[in-house]
Image (cartoon, rainbow, N blue to C red; front, side, top):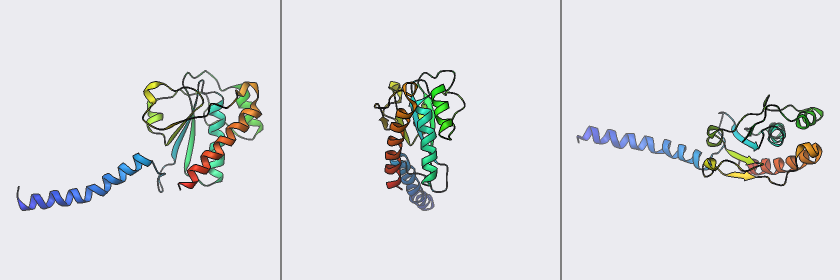
Length: 168
């Protein structure tokens, strides 16, 4: 190898290493981007029609109120055709709207692109190991009482936002 080629290789490696470290750091800890797109939090319930819808709506409202660069989406493992009437009416009464117009199925891209995933149900096996999945199993069904489900979800969302804010 000539001296010029050797110097070029060393220079290139020296320049590339910090860039690779930056990519590694972002994928390892996934800090929120500076001036970029908000990090995505994925809320997942079985039908993508109630708990995840309520959680995403409240998360987005409260994150905006704290000026945090996170955005939530709602997904379902077996999405139904329409958003739950209980969830839609409850959100409307609370002055909020659903993040999605209709339930959306969970994809691998949703999981792999997420900063955090919160499940209200069991997630498919092929999603485990790619990102930390937090489970909120204590949330009552929205159809049996919107207020109680909402209050439990909001309590969890506030704790999650406190954690994310502390990492800011």
